[in-house]
Length: 267
Image (cartoon, rainbow, N blue to C red; front, top):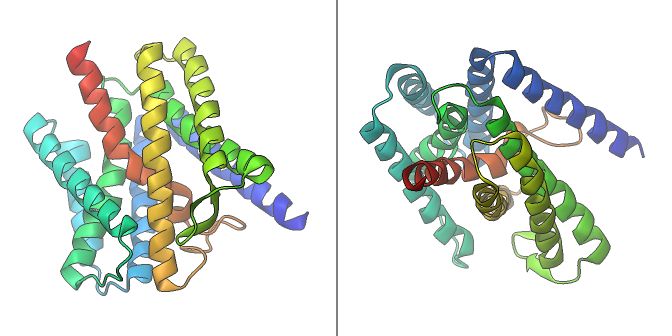
């Protein structure tokens, strides 16, 4: 009971922090996710045993260029290509049964694009339509939270079939299906409030967010299992680290940005 209370209090503070940043100003949102990116990189660096501080400088340089200095579509598409390429390579690592040791350079590239690139695209999503689309980014947060919450509740109630026991023994196929169903329901209601996307586009976004977010969760679990740790950090009592909270969003963000580009192109 005490642990549930601690998790609940931390969760409420985390949600209020996000809501405050989103609705206070675009600068507050930018600064919050720049800081979250640094925190995720710090936790990744510790788990991956990556030495030095070069990755922080590279991330801040990339973040500054793409958030404040350029709107060039070619540069943004190049960053998206690099980020998604690294993410796809990491999926091969996730599903491989052979042990894998990364070189220092590979650890640097993974951290810079998987985590750094993910946080940059997460920050860029609400600017996709020029003005700061508060309800669009909140909708994506809500889809992630609904999926996580109902995947847990459905899995705990009906879960029988393990999803990926070698990486995350508690996750079940039934839980994943339940999370997807409730995320689609949430997408239906979100389409009433954020009309930049049609109901069909919100449904497609929900499917993408659930699948990519679940893969991001499993990927972080594999990194932690390799390092022999339960949580990426301890900054959030009852929840672990910042990377533990953002693993789904960080992995899903470049794919969400890509699908928003596709929606803009075909609409």
